[in-house]
Length: 148
Image 1 (cartoon, one colour):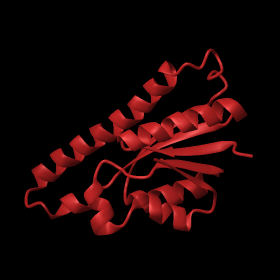
Image 2 (cartoon, helix red, strand yellow):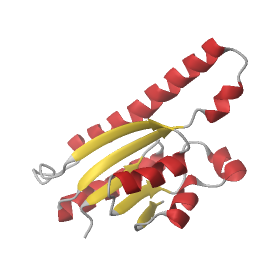
Image 3 (cartoon, helix red, strand yellow):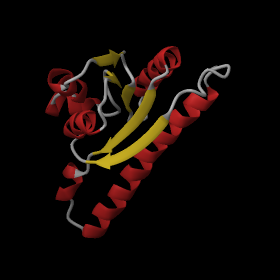
């Protein structure tokens, strides 16, 4: 039923909890997991110096890669007792609008289930821009599991 799971991560405690659910579900049904971290750089484009923008983008990409690496470690350290060997893991780091990029990835990767945390690192995003989780939940073409 859920052959391809998309786990979104930003390294927050909520995405780590979502990762636990993805691992347990994938172990039970033998799903593959695509772990996606999306870097949104649009708001730093207003900074005055080009060099500063590049440095900020580099920092944000490293942060996104750290979130992906953290999940990989989480999978390796989980108490799978050999049952994680059948989990195919793929990681992706993309730049763009998080909700739009997640929705595009659902289509491109033939995702059957999205698992994501209910809130990310930046609580201000929810207040100002609307929740990424909410936007994905409303527009996804597959089931979405929101983890608290």
